Amino acid sequence: MGKIMLIAAYALAVLLNLFVIVIGARFLLVPQAAAAGYGVPAKKDGDAAYLTVKGSRDLTYGILGLALLAFAGVRAEAWYMLVVALVPLGDTLIVLRNGGTRAAAFGIHFATAVVVLIGAALLFAV
Image (cartoon, rainbow, N blue to C red; front, side):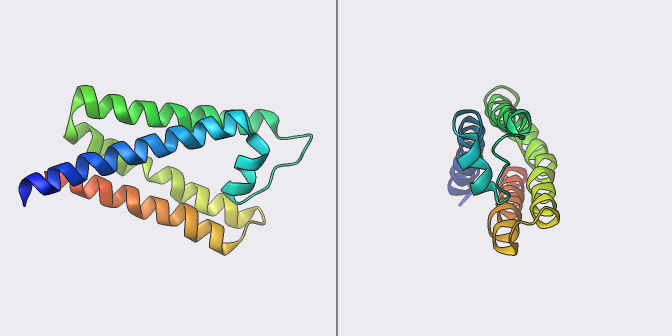
């Protein structure tokens, strides 16, 4: 059981970090489509800088998570994931406060926060 949990914890951590890297790259490469997928479509002529910030932030968070897992270990990654779960929780509120749907807020962002917290719990448990 311990080895399976260890593999699951590492796999979920790596997948979540890679997922965040993909999201960041998407915001840098196709910002309008990425914003629509986020749950709050961007204005065509006014949000380029903010979309770039979002892309850069997510890309950095994903790389940092992988670096922590590789070089600092499971405990550091667990703490990182516990703290970084605040990002999708904040994103939930951003979507709700800016005209996005409840489905996007809770189905994408809140659900992501829950999965990140599960990942943190698994890492703390191994």
